[in-house]
Amino acid sequence: MPLTTANAAAEMEAASKVGDPEADALVSDLIDNREVDGVNHLFRTINKLGKGQDYSQLPERLAEFMSRAEADPPGWSPADVKAAEGFFAHHHGEVSMLQGTVGLIGTYLAPTGAFTLRSTGRLGGVEGPGRRLSQSSRLFVDMGNKGAMTDGTLRASVTKVRLVHASVRQLHKKSGEWDYAKWGEPVSQKYTTGAACVFSTQILQAMRNLGIDVSKDDAHGFMCAWHYVNHYLGTPEKWLLPKNADDVEQVWNQERDKEWKKTDDGLFMTAQAIKFYRELLPPAVSDAFIAVIRVGLGDKYADMAGVPKSPLDLAGKPLAEGHKVVSGIGGGLLGGSAKKTVGVNPYKEVLGVASKHFNAIEKYALTHDKDDQPQMHQELGDNR
Image 1 (spheres, rainbow, N blue to C red):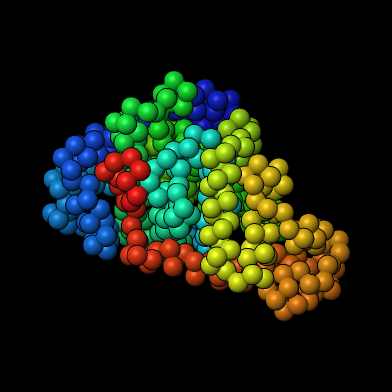
Image 2: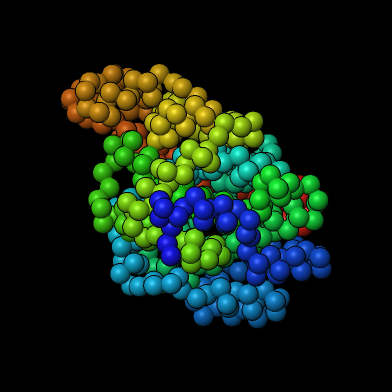
């Protein structure tokens, strides 16, 4: 039975105690046999674990796992692929940027998730934002590539992330430091499905906040894409996100405030991310960029995460509603003056420029130190 507002609370409570038994068994064995470095090397050197891929280069256990993991999501159809590709044909650049900013910061608002990320090597330390962006960018970029859901490339990218999640679970388990009574399972199915909500329906809400028009058909296509990703992350059918955008939004609106909290870990992660953006963007661009993130999240959640306020987002809100225009928004970003036509939404222009710069950040993240693949961990805090 799919998730609904009636069953979501009980199902997510159950999901908080469940990991991914098949992936967990495989990764536990790889860790015990000190094979993680070898698998990570394969992740880096095999360009595409795609359709018809020869798995002979992989350890036998991993090859068997990858073969079993190829099955399509339940009820998956060519119409779902067409709908997903339709969404990305219209919104790939801006949604990739929003997933890598509003989406990532949204995951820091889940206390257990923020603690898990901060405690796992470079996913949370000083190098955390770049590493986290690198490990997520491939997924965000691949989602929008034409053919990614039919040629096996997206499935392979997501399955690698699934194995990273399993390595995090196993290392916390082996550390003896994880409080299972308090936190449930590390990177549980509840966290995985919750993160899928953040990167899907929360992003659609951010697009609305920023005045971006998304058709009902396109919203459906985006949810199809995340239903697909959710499946390849190892989520059982009963906890998969529905393909209906309205249904997922209703569930998320009901459950979000139970899950999102202000925490020291979340504030730390957000501060690191904001610092990372500022260092990689010109000053005028970074101000407008952070304003876009804040408006996308909305004041309540931006405050909770610690996204700084700026004159740009405070002045921009009436603009987004078409009430008045404040000159100079973005400074150099928009050429020193804003359009004076009532009803113009400057965020569309800001988003266009910001997306261009953010895509450059993603390219940097994907190529910096050749860190272009998700990496499993051999030990907790091992700086991978």
